[in-house]
Length: 319
Image: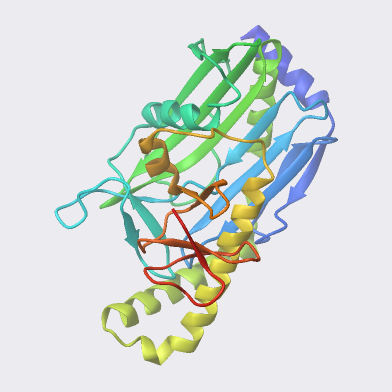
């Protein structure tokens, strides 16, 4: 307890600055001054908004991340969608991935294996650093299952993943996801920094009202979609879907600029993160969003499309 109090005191003595979400204007939170900070809230659909704030220390030895844009909501397998990794398509509202429910502890361990595969060679379990739960103040999470996974790596580095999963009727979500890699002797202090940043997280009232309207529009969209009356809202939906495709492309570009993750991950790792490994026509490995169609295409500008047939001239298939 004394150690935690001392760490907390040092964290509050550090310099902090307030980050306002530059993408959706959805939230504010404290981030350490002088660190490289990227990210925001990325909208993938009417009801699919994903948080990712990536923070790297000035010396590059510590990386702290809140959320992850690659993590979707999960649809529980049923008789119509029995296969994990399948996409449950809600159109412009959201794209869910079929997966069995995982507790916070289970999810933290699985995510850690994917997130730190390259940076953490031969991970060995270690005692988790002391501190309070790292729960983001997000409404609608309901009852959650918190858990964490802590490892020590070769090269005197340590990792920690804190995850809270929330089970609902027919689907489940990762309500909170916090992860970091740092020198072993700084791990406890970095967790204290994570606790400060998480505790400062606030959803802005204007965005909350905006999201309520988006959820209302999602209901209208789904009713029209289910009743096969999309012509009535075709122009509006087409514009929104184009915007969502552009956002997904922006997210892919954002992730490419982050520290390299594993070149290869387990098949279940791909299922969890909703991504697909492909090879472009030049033989370069790529990671793309798992789509609802069977094939992936790329053009000369690097734009990627998911379609069953050739989109048109200038497109080449990725295998």
